[in-house]
Length: 456
Image 1 (tube, rainbow, N blue to C red):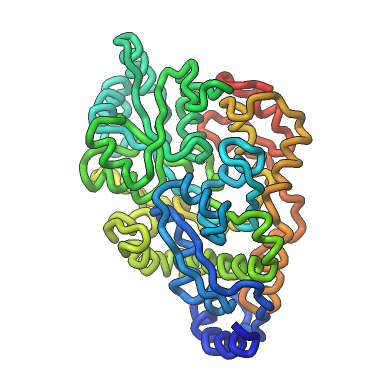
Image 2 (image 1 turned 90 degrees about the vertical axis):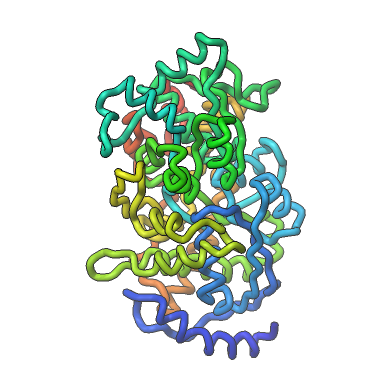
């Protein structure tokens, strides 16, 4: 597409785009980049947190940057990553752990980077009705239509032991070995002294010493797998926890907001070689995704999310998430059903822009590296400097900041929306279900603080 044609297209779309944005100064001249590639294919998995990519397409944010983007559902996370690496896809909605794992060579080896975090929070842990009833028997406080939260795995521990005594293990699903879901489920279990198993050089399934057996199940298959009795619980993103409630087959017992408040969830990933070959195109993509995230988090004066119902309607389409609108709408509009009798306001269940969500923080990368080491996916101890170096190999805030600066100059983003002066590390936090403090600059101290898992 010629620069002249993109200029015409930009003028036509700028009015519509700017109407979608509020709390910014009046839009200035659009800075169109000289794109190396303007026809792109992006992959996603059928989860509500693919929303920034979908909205960037459906609301014209990609188009306003001169990009024509096809958004293509992928059957599973491995296929999605493989298609990005081979070039079948230009980029994708990825698990935060995928670019890191690929870059350090756990599983597939390839240098994958991210310049954009897609969202915070968004996951839950659901158990079958039978397991929930047993948890209630073990903890009278849970015998309520609205039990107190957060719910730890303490009431699950006797159930785990009973199964072990009978020569079997509780079966639980997660979506991928390097997924946040795997690490969050392990964190939740281990915080109540339930060993979720270790990865070793010879055990790539991560079941060594496990008291609970974790297995991979694609997100859309979680409810059906639970209903069939093949697993008794799972950790997954939305809408597949709310789907279990709607179908009456399970009870979400916690969300990842309670496991780690405002934790990073998905990222937008590309290969480093693709970014190097298409630097302007990459900038244009990040610009569009930032605006999509901002649109998703727009609120009115009362603090109500104003665009989420429209987003949920779009995501419910069969070519995107393909779940019922009412199910997607729950968490997307700031509510979460733990049971049909227990609907709770959770305005930060899905975060797509606020809390400096979209910035690619080095400290997020370090946390995932600590979990890979804790559970044995990284088989040997590493010095603290290694964690910082690897995070900087994958997370690329310099690309993000360049894109954000262009948006500020165009009047589409406010100066205060972006953490310009940060060193890439968030402040230490103890907002975890076990109360431990995480400081991204002290990964070895964090490893030592845990009772279960590798400590160095």
